[in-house]
Length: 576
Image (cartoon, rainbow, N blue to C red; front, side, top):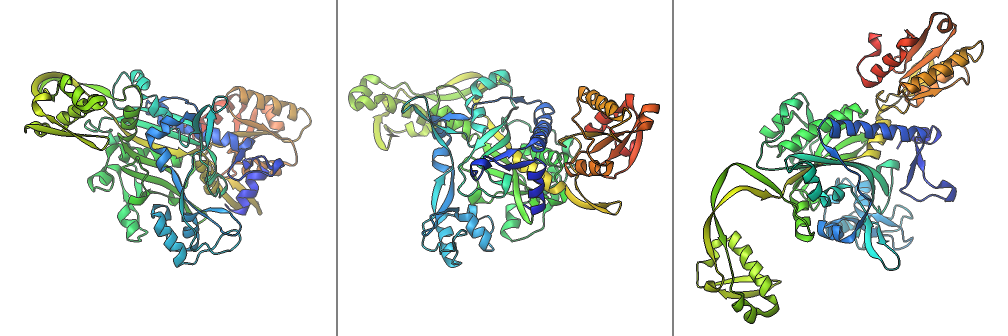
């Protein structure tokens, strides 16, 4: 983070370290008045694009989740980062970050831990805090989830959620009813996530508490995909695995249809959401000349993903992950279907009933019980699974199944095996999931970094945030030319009227008009309104544009409509 932007963020109330009066704790930030408004507007823009315009539903689930959910999802076993501890000062570090920061190796996160240890030894890397060698120190997995206890005393184990996704997966049995069991449908959520990062850094880019905006889009993989004509004009800057492995820096610039035809992107819904994501990032102020989609390397993929593309923005010479568009297949719902006490399938009706052959078993429990005792029930279940999976296994005189590592052999005649014709009106499927998951704080940070400029106006240097009007913390600053002769009173009345019209307004009568303009430029306010003597006489005010500094006169009665249209992108300042 540049010193200039860091200083601006603190001084003008965008964000700052939390609890500084008590020394602060790394990885926790407070959004000040300007930052909270910017963050809220970014969230509203995301909700507009991925909920309202896509016709998806939105929920708000708890941030504390019982342990069995994460045991089923695999997070207890696989949600780790690589930790290396300094033998002298005891400071813990992300081992992959130590490697990336001090060598030419990129994406060390995708490298196995033993290879990271070897890289530390090969490059004789040292502790970033005290300079003592880290060679020979073990690199171990560290689970990032915050553990807690639910209820008094020992209670029940639980965790602060590291993502919002599981809240949408665990509620799927009810959500599918709200969607009338019709695929595809999407469920969105904006909320806090928590990860006990080993070494938080870079302000909002790596924190321990953060806001995520996630969409879980449930699809039938055998059905038609999206209408890609709706995003046919979007050019995707793609950085696939092959280009990364060849150390190339050239991106493929393809439309979604071209990316699918050339086999660069595997799934239609993934291609669709890449396009919608690019449109959204541009909408909130990310510079498209410093933006790309990078495909995850094989060793980098999360345990639940078959493919993933990260939206990345370049900030300060580094590429920052802003979003992941992942194909989660049916991993999550399958796991919860296995572990939970509800159904995570959707019944899909056929256009016409079908006659199918189905293999079934009806074991003789009078044989299985005495033969296998307490395991008889599980043996019967294993026989049913085998019949559905491989009916040829029942061709011989005996059939063998495995239960918890032990093999059991049953005479075929005792299994009640048969193949019969059945008429089916539909099928139960476990939907696949495509997930666009955004880091809201990272989007805010990148929009600030990409919007922050220094230019010259009237021979003077000015700092300006060229944030899109839609997401700027304040839409309009209202000033009296001077606070006398009724100008201040009229300006305050006008500010109140604009607030009633639903606009975000700040009133300022401190200092000369030039200083007031500069203050609003610095926090990204796109328009300023000045009430002068002509306003009192003629009923028109001066409206100034932040980016061009040009001014025009607008009748007071038209001002709420004009400013609303400008904010919403329905008109341009040049049109005035």
